[in-house]
Length: 398
Image 1 (cartoon, rainbow, N blue to C red):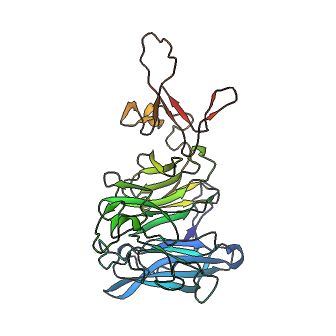
Image 2: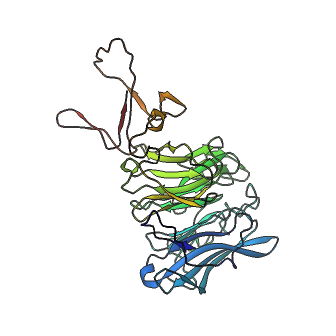
Image 3: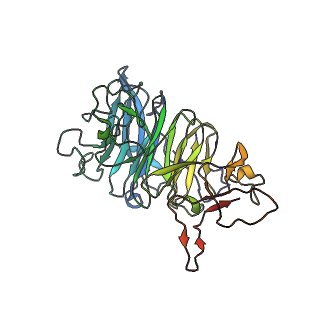
């Protein structure tokens, strides 16, 4: 684990915080998968690490470890000898380990675990609430030894593993809480056809292996579709092959994205946004057609700005308002504005709404088409003088 000065865009100085390479097994999809600071880090110096270690035999090739480490110098480094094991989970295969841990505003530690691996969940872990695989876990690391169970967990009183918060997940590859609303968003990697975005609620069953996205996968022994919570968005393999879950944008640099869930795909590198429709649904729009493959994770600063971590180039990128624009001014090509179809600039971009005026004026026979777009969740108001009051980020195109 390294740290650097995030306030200096030109820094080249990396500082070592913790080295546990001797404990980590990177077989398959294993490795050091995530870190999370305790909410009271400034006082207790705790950081929590999710990594995989070598299992005892071929039936358990990897073990998922949630461990706590302590700093004695404000986070400049962590004492390797301070490792305290919080939770271990046996993995029957070397893939689908999940890969994200984090604290909610309730102070509890959330852990996303995949279905154990292979393909098609052959051991039916995701629908089995008697084990921890294929589930979102929630534990209280500030009570008990090594942890306690929150009293309102779905199975806190029995009927399943008490650590489980939600289940029916295949491989939750990155999830996050909305900084403003505390809603839990999750990207779940599909099997062979569909990638999905879920909103996770306590006690929710998200359908895997019975459903891949909204589509039946292996419904043998499964309940009716109404028993499962379906994704709020999905996309097929023509657009990507492995979703990387993201964050609801709460920064100030790009006002038009306020309240929009931003996510990407490890394979295609496309960055999308889910814009609220105002009727409880979400509209998926392409924000960047491709950034190249390899975005294994996103991150969000305390200020709400978004970062992208590329595993192939080993670079970290920050999303800015001029990501597609020419430096020093507006885009020099119409196709770079985002208002038109990049493949055919004579056509509007997907999602623009056609409109016409009540009283068209004469323009020497010119034929005109008009379109508008309003940011997700925003509305066009009527001013006192009867004029339209367009929200910030709205676009009018003729």
